[in-house]
Amino acid sequence: MNVMKNRLSRKEPATMGEVVHEYVRKMKIAAGLNEQLVFDAWDIVSGAAGYTVSRYLKDGVLYCSMSSSVVRSRLFPKRDELVRKINDFLREDELFVQDDPRTGFVRQIVLK
Image (cartoon, rainbow, N blue to C red):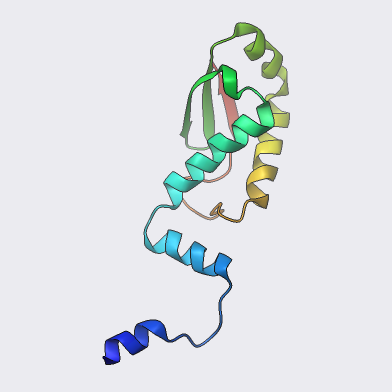
């Protein structure tokens, strides 16, 4: 009974956002969640979700395979701008864990 009381009692109130962040850290799912949020940000910011065949994130580099060479050639000169917009999008997302060592912000985009 005493164990249950300690688990349920808190010294300070916490917001729902703080509770969710703590849960994500404790369950060690931040890297997977961050990766999915990066992919969602790519789809929204680039507008090329329908032409993106596959996506892969490694060491801050987002690799995107495109089904259309025309779309790829149009996005190519905008890569730096897309990186900035994706990172801005991620900063605004409450679920994105910014200080996760495995998956963080996008540093570069490689289009294939």
